[in-house]
Length: 365
Image 1: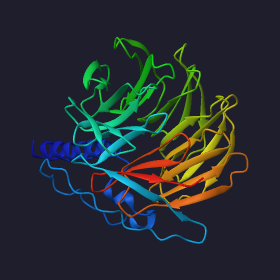
Image 2: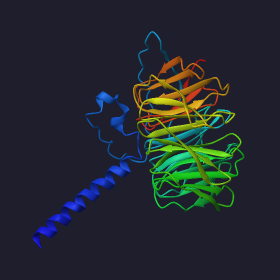
Image 3: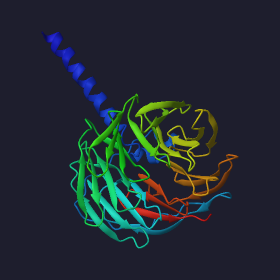
Image 4: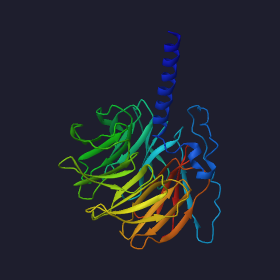
């Protein structure tokens, strides 16, 4: 009996450790991950919980430019969150911003003035992901409480709750016409919802791990996803089936995007690379290399000829699509980078900082 008890205790310890590691994988932006890979040997604990007051946002410590780099210009700091901002997104015109935080709130901002327009409360857990509707009149948020919620940004009220997940929600995307919302999480399933009624339209199955990122094609016919299985997956929205999988990444994928014409796919992640793919054949066209730490976000710019990226090396980079050449490199202050968003023209970036503020940065073109 004594041996059985000891064995059960060991099993319990192993299970507890496994659960803790699985949960930690949701948050790629831990404090220790703000360092370069060679510096990540020494862990950094999260600061003790703060009282619900807004911390003052100090100016970002200046970065040091190199011969080939420029300094991004900090335009303003948006303060209000009382914990790390996990996700943010600009409106199509770059004038508004939505953010979600570990403080369980969603906040809607005027990006030009830094004014908080709405504070949206209702989630029972940390908010991991947010997305703005194409018309910027609604937003959707996903949380550790296993729900996704749609908000009316004019009234600040919650209109729909999606309850179909059986685990943490990690990523969200609106269809271009605003009629569908895709949500996904730890369970690996991608749920397609009617954004108005909250009815589940389809469930896309076939991922082998947590889905970290998703994006619709501009015509809404296709969806691309990526995550912990290191694979980029292409889906038919109307048929709800997996079309093809793109392999080449060596670590978790954190960002995916379609080109405006839907012929190319962009992916980036923890292997420090950005990869360009032919959407029809699934072949890799080229990779973009230069980031010194995880690439958090990569997207096509409006002209379709350039790509913008940003990562934990505290740099934003602009690349030529056809040649793979790095055109510009911008450095930002040393305040960490818990979340990242770009405007569609690449002129502005937003970073979620260690002091819980959101920083708006300007880049020359």
